Image 1 (spheres, one colour):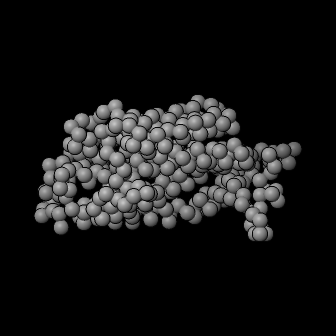
Image 2 (cartoon, helix red, strand yellow):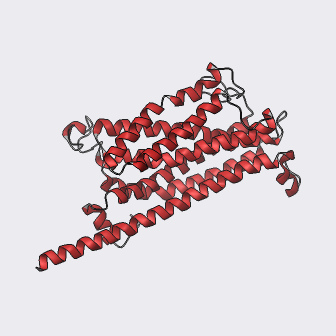
Image 3 (cartoon, one colour):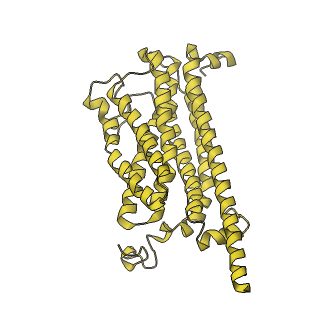
Length: 65
Length: 263
């Protein structure tokens, strides 16, 4: 076991700023990418649904006249 | 170029199996959807195991103290940044040869995640450089060529975003991806070819690794986690790209009318 207390773990032998700065920013970037991806997927689906609805209306109008 | 479904595309000796079956967005879309959760779960599990090994099993380094623990994120990120760029170049070459539009979509889907890894490699490298070298940044061959890789990712994405016609954007992007791939071996061998502040490879295919076994395991498990995450992110993004680009086609319309089902 490397650490005797949570405080020791947090301090990382005096290198806390560098170690947690690395892991923290990476975690943030990955979380941001996943959020952006979820948003992009949702928007693409919404656009496709809208497009499909317009196409259906268009087809109905054409067959009706 | 012949149609992907032509008989020439069938593997010899495997009648009925078409190599290009999943080359069409219509068939690849549900497959990519089924692969998403396995990727996320694998990435999360491997990351948990890797971090446990990295922080609780691997001992404190005799010379670098605990600052070396940045390695568990720095090396996997640097590896992925190179692998992803080569994968992009590969898909662009496939796209140019077979004229398969899905190949270019794969390339576009990989770019942001590759850029993320390149940035993480540079960022963690800077934070590791300060305590060990005494500086955040130095213009040495390894660092500079990795920075160029990051700019290549940015250039690829900016160029694609600037061209409205997706087919022209694909071809312009392919040029950057393929020509820029020359940079990847330069990054990899930079520590051998030039006198760099950056250390040589601790792990290589040709020699025994020069680091403690537990440290090595932590790094390899984290690298696998990064692989799983990258595949998951690229598959999710390529699904969005497929819908965006093909929303005027019948298969996307049917998909959209199906009430947004998961597959």
